[in-house]
Length: 398
Image (cartoon, rainbow, N blue to C red; front, side, top):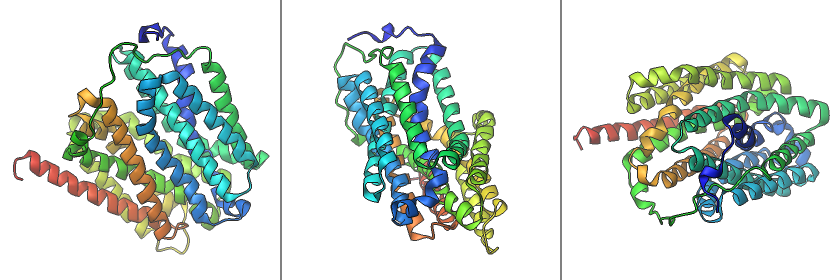
């Protein structure tokens, strides 16, 4: 098997090769949001089943990190990437032709499995090739910037496509993008898995017994879950109840993503002045403040941009402040098993977000802001409690 050093592409060429796969996994969630309110009628099912197409996608995307990481360590990055991309494309094209709710849910799960595989293979390749090179930081930074654009532009693209060509065209677009990325990668994406040395068998117990790991992973889950519940409820709140058009909804939704992008531009300077714990505490406080403003905004009879989206701007700033530091806090003890720790970090976050976030959407009225109010109250409270215990422990008072 070739050495990682055989990957000799320039930085722009490498980005053009890898970036489409990084974007596809998120795009499959965001581009679909504008048509979520109409899907129960299209598939003759309930809103709860359509919610499953969002929740299961998130859950499977996280679980796949644990599954495909070891597979890529044994089989290589290339087969995992190509196989995942082909599965993603096939599921996308099959979604075009289905009108049965159960089949639609199954195909979304298969789409998520493919997305998880391509994410693992892409980031494993970055680690293989750029772990000891300065370009690695550049690539991770650009990937993060790209993923910030997806929630801003994905719903707008989905609304324009659906308005012009219908909802099925959204999945045709996803399938075609996956095929194009695969055709580009097939002759150029060479294997990068190191060819020497044994792959150690890593125990999960030291990671899962770490209080810092759980504290910062819960905070990460609280932040990411807030955005998940927002995009799970926003189409029904803004389109069904507030009367927004699909394009109007997409623009309103994009403002929250733009706030995240602007905050990300400045958060590094703020985080440098605070400790990780202080940054997370402030992030959780902003989520709680956003929840309070959302609750106050429910006094009018119907939701609006001011009562629903503007408070989400506060939440969005708290999300960015939190997720910019939680990885360092959760993983700082596990430099020797960083790959496994990262996989658990993302997997647990996806499970918490997908399961707990979905329960809040189901238990509370999913076409109101109350699921978002409840999530942004409960999870930050739990994470803040864990942070308080951690600080007490580090201070030697426990």
